[in-house]
Every structure is written in structure tokens, then in C-alpha cells.
Length: 198
Image (tube, rainbow, N blue to C red; front, top):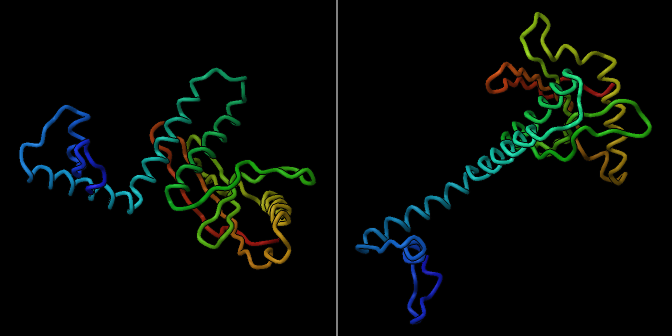
């Protein structure tokens, strides 16, 4: 922790650097050691992913702030779907997914894939269904045979963007996420491997 030097050439501890910036002087070496241990603890915290989660939370907060900016009118059901997709994107990031595409479309086929993400070695094609209330029929039931067929076609089109030698080695998975926006924090229900290739 003694990385920088003062003008006299002597090592300057993190505490001295910190206290100089905040006009606080270290009273004794025990305080310096305590502060440096806290800084090491913060570094360990970063190793556990806490900073990553904090960064995701900040990004989500920023995206919510953009909702305040006036935008063209959009149908309420479409707005609900977009909010659910965005909430899912951040939740998946917190769960270790690496999202690589959102609302991916192909010029050859109708429809879109809500989210495409890597989860470990799996390339996941994720369909998000958002509701504002718990109905008799759950949100995931909206992914019927027709929707599964469309998602599979689009997934094949997406995989064609990879070199042919790699395509066969990429394990793909189709996930469904149900999101319920009930006024407070969104509720998520994950269904990894919800369906297979048709």
C-alpha cells in the first residue's frame, strides 16, 4: 500500500494521500494500519463481485432516469414489455449472464429475440414475458408453439453469424423469463431450457 512518494522522497501511505485530500491528519500509526486494512478489505469486496453488482445497479438507475425524458407516444402494452425486458437485462447481468443482444431481428424472418446472452458455455436465447398482474394464466404460457418456432428460426439465423467450424460446438439454450411489474420491485421467474429446437 506504500506506492506513492512525497516530495521528500519518503513513501506516502494511502492514509496520508486520503487524509491530505480531506484535510485530516493521522493521529497514530494504528489509525493508518486500520485504514489500510479497510482499503484491502474493499479490494477483497471487489473480488467477490460486489462492485460489479453496484455498477449494474447504477446502470439500471440511469436507465430509469431516462424514462423521465419525454419520448414519442408508445402503446401501454408495448411500454410494459420494454420495461420488463430492461428489468430482465439487469437481473440477468446480476445472475452472471453476459447479454450480447437485445431485441435482435433478422431481415429474413418476422419477430425478434428479446435477449441473447452467454451463461457459462451456453448461448441463451431468452424470451421475456411481462405482466402487470398475476392472472389465472402465467406469463410464460404466452410462449406458445408459434412463438417457439419463430424464436428457433431466429436463433438459427443468429448462429449463422458464427464461423461454420464454431457453430456445431456452441451449446444453445432457450430460456423464458416471466416478469411481473406490480408497482414495487419486479418479480422474476426464470425457466432455463424451457424448450428445445423444433
